[in-house]
Amino acid sequence: MTELDTARREQEATPDAGTQPERAGTGWAPLLRLALRRDRIMLPAWIYGIVLTVVSTASSYQRLYPTEADRAKVAASASTGALRAITGPAFDLTTVGGLTAWRVAGLASVLAGLMSLLLVVRHTRAEEEAGRTELVGAAAVGRYAVPVAGFLVAVLANVSIALLTAAALAALGLPVAGSLALGLAIGAAGLVFGAIALVTAQVASVARAASGTAGALLGLAYLLRAVGDSGASWLSWLSPIGWSQQVRAFSGERWWVFLLPVLLTAGLLVAAALLLPLRDAGAGLRPQRPGPPVADRRLAGPVALAWRLHRGALLGWTAGYLIVGGAVGAVASDVGDLLGDGAQAKQLIDKLGGGADVVSTYLSLIVGLLGLVAAAYAVQAVLRARTEETEQRAEPVLAGAVRRLRWGGGHVLVAALGSAWLLLVAGAALGLVHAWRTGDAGQIGRLIGATMAQVPAVWVLGTLAAALVGAVPRLVAAAWAVLAVCLLLGQVGQLLSLPDWVLDASPFQHAGDAPVHTPQAVPLLVLLAVAAALAAVGAVGLRRRDIG
Image (cartoon, rainbow, N blue to C red; front, side, top):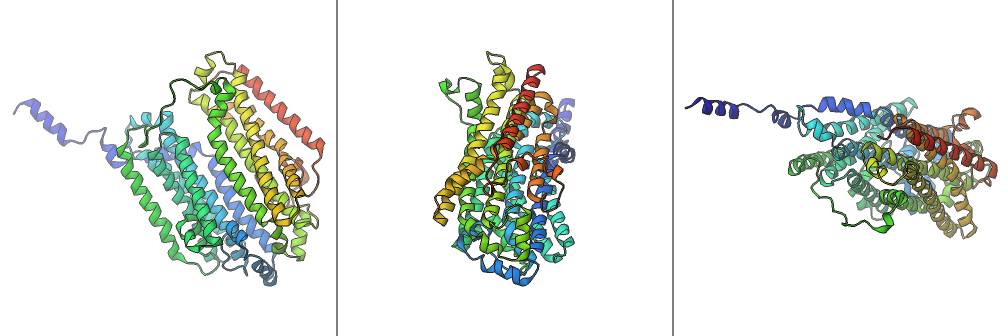
């Protein structure tokens, strides 16, 4: 045997340094730390927002319905099919914990699922699409390290939500077992959709397709739960969101239900692990469809390009706003019976500025929330310009006969018109269904006007994002932080009796409280002026700084 043969045999018997980490999955811990550092602003905002939604609801119910007699009135009004489709089944509404679980278990599970799928896609498919996974894989990092780290980010986020929710509810005096069950139910739902996103990240070739598919499955789960709770109850058992409610927190907890999300999550993780070796790095199992050889004339110009990039997301948002508007309109006329005529309920309504009109107060709160969510779309759409820049797709466009302001202005214009369109759709759906329930056709124009009054405040948040993109792009994450603050002030600011000067920091505070009161023109014009000034700041900054 020659020395060459001996060396070859020794090389074959020794694990190669480049393949050993792939088998062992080495390298996930540094990637996890990097992911947590990247999400140091967004992740706490998600966790805090979801926990605050649950805890503030429980605190409000403690003050609204202090006695069992008050809660009995709510139980008597919770039997309508439309209300069950929105909130889910009511198991025990004689306790504050049972009321809280009834109202927020489904909503918080949807939010946790949305957070999880976005996180997983962000740290898996989006990293591959940007080409960073290939660079990381050139080092001593196994191929499974990236998906493991991405999913662990979602695990840590959902565990934090579960524990913080349980601790906060127990601190309010609610039973520990029910508090823990509700927190774990929300976290379990989040993990299921995080695992779903891990699978779609293997199938899809681009991040938008992966998150869009996972988001569609989240919407399907909500729809199955809604249809099942309003009629065929067996459909609810096909939905991870329905499982969160079937745990029956504060209503004789059924701990065995947690086996369902655990088994499904484990199965999805195994599926993702089996699918990963079947594809090339950077590619998906489903290849991306090639475009036409010649671009459509409708794509000529930066505004048309921006519309092409945003139209898919806007279509999904439109469907969501249409469903939410119709659902809220279906239950709005029942709110008076739900709240009852107790002194605590009237005190809360007066505190929110609604006077004696319970339905108008409820619609005002919903309209404000729709405005805040539309601002999230506006911020997301504007920040797409920064994404195009950092992924080096803007530079080839600007190398041609395209000015910077036209390129950036296209994204801002689509964000502005798109957010206004969403509020128009929601107002129309809300008004039509509410008018049908009440027999008052005047509600259509009234509620469309109420939602459109939120547009100037939405544009302030959108142009703030534009100002950051143009002037200080390294701080673009601050746009999400400002939105989170506005959400906090709008949802619990008045309930917590915060000073007026603190509440006035939110532009939505100046958008009025329609349909309780008629919107005032002067504050809306001031908001439009602020939005114009912020857009100008962004334009000046974009012209002066380097691209990339």
